[in-house]
Image (cartoon, rainbow, N blue to C red):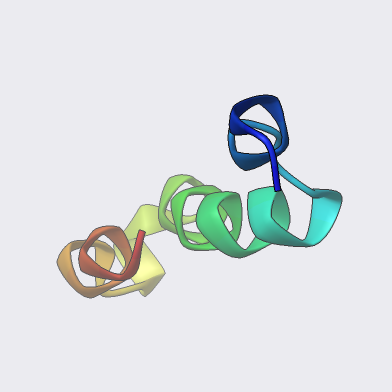
Length: 40
């Protein structure tokens, strides 16, 4: 694996990172935002 390969993010990796952030921003009054942000 080259250095440039290591800096590329797959769609799956991006979704895993962004999903908790997306959840925290949607209807935050109904969710534990702190816990969701801790996952991110």
